[in-house]
Image (cartoon, rainbow, N blue to C red):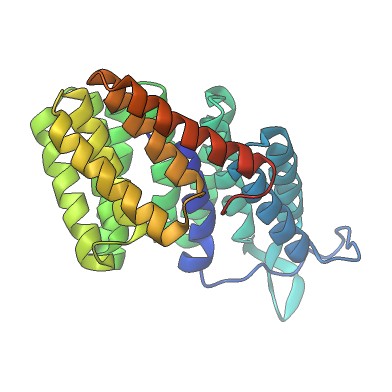
Length: 301
């Protein structure tokens, strides 16, 4: 299983790191509330992020829709002529990506596709087809296709994202490691174990070299590989990877972080598969406690 909730969180944070433009002024003639749309957009987006992690999905959707409404008002305008709209603000494709990815998490695939396709179209128009943020949307679309059991379509999208990221960021960038890891997941879904193992190992190595062996992003690769080996009945290899991923996440993110809960749940599946029911129940109980704390606003976000 892919940790789509964590992927959603990561995707939301990508915009600030990749696009240097801030939210532009509201288009003249639009409604200007006391709080500027750009500020409201950030507040709604942050609230949506937090609600997703806490499992309050209805609240998350309301906030993402409110953020999208604010983003629709934002435009990049010619400073010499405020009536001359140059482009949509980067907040718009970001909100579309957030909402589309949220729909994927909630298995609302028919709603996710047009939202993500619009995000892709805007990003390509405003930034060009080879910008790293275009690759962000391609990855989100690939997650949608993989969730719909359309692995071939997911692979094409990820190959394009990989080409963009390698060209723009360099072949040793951590984002390239993410692309490779996702390609491993697709190959595993296509029942191509040798190909999957190659992508997983290459992605893990790329992330380790770019970020260090104990970075939380490395744990993403570790859990993906562990799930792959678990499904192939290679329990010993899977368990070592789960243990390492769990150690990294507990140390770097805190013992009550949602990704710790996810790792515990996936590890428990391995334990049940190998007949260790008592230990599996113990880990599932720990995961349940973390998720309950998050819903109450106590856990680490």
